[in-house]
Each structure stands twice: as C-alpha cells, then as structure tokens.
Image 1 (cartoon, rainbow, N blue to C red):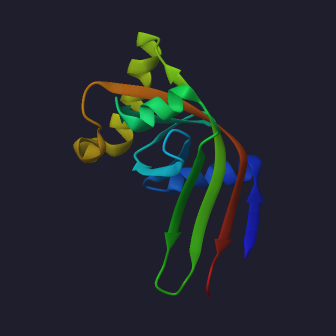
Image 2 (image 1 turned 45 degrees about the vertical axis):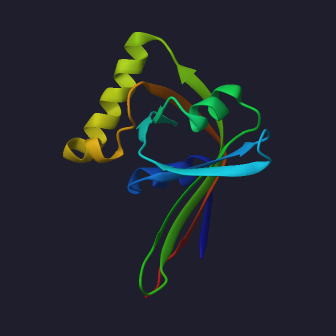
Amino acid sequence: MQIFFGGEAQELLAGFRFIRIACYDADRDECYIVPLAFALDGVDVMIAVGDGRLAALLAANQARPGLEADSIQPDFSYRTITALAQPSEVTDPAERDKGLDLLQARYGDEWHIWRPPAPRRLFRLHLVDVQARVEEKS
C-alpha cells in the first residue's frame, strides 16, 4: 500500500466521481453524511447543496467537516482519500457562477442527476490534513 499526503494526495481527488462529506450536528448529537458532486478549483473543492441541513451545518462551521472518496475493485485494489475541510460559502455572484459552471462542465449531461434543488448554495472547501491510500493488486 502507498500513502500520499498533501498535494500528492490531493492530485488523486480528480479521479473520483463523487465525494462524501460528514458534518457533526451538535443540535442532534449525530453525524450527518452526504454523497456529493464536486469540482476542483485549483486546490479547493467546490460543492453545490440545497438550502437544507448540510448548508446550515457548513455555514455554521461548528466543526471542520470530513471529506472522503473511495474506489474499490473486485480484486480489492483500492484508492481512498480523506481530508478535513474549511468551508466558506460563496456569495459573490461572479465567483458563484464560476463554481456552478465548473460543476456543470465536470458532470455534463449527468449534472441534472447530482444538481441539488433550488435554491442552491455554493461552498468552497479548502482541504487540510489530506491523505490518500492506494493499493494496487498485481
């Protein structure tokens, strides 16, 4: 197994189709985990969410959310990436349009499957403590 950190680990993120984000909801004393479409904007991750529970948790920024993506093959070869994220809501109209355009470009005709319902909120996730594990079977 190979382990990658920082930028090396983050480079692997582009190869994943979706991510999972986990936030702790202190009001309910439980973890809330959601699969999401994402796009990369430099070293940051852009996500669009509906105006619901996840948006409220990200905006409150109670604790750093965790991010995870994985791919496991039948021979048990795998790639996984984990990170903590520092979320910030994108409210500038031009930056928001750019982020939504990145998501549309990444998913193309499949964007309607992943696109959250309106009103959409866009968040930029700055990743910290990024690590990836890769196991390739011969």
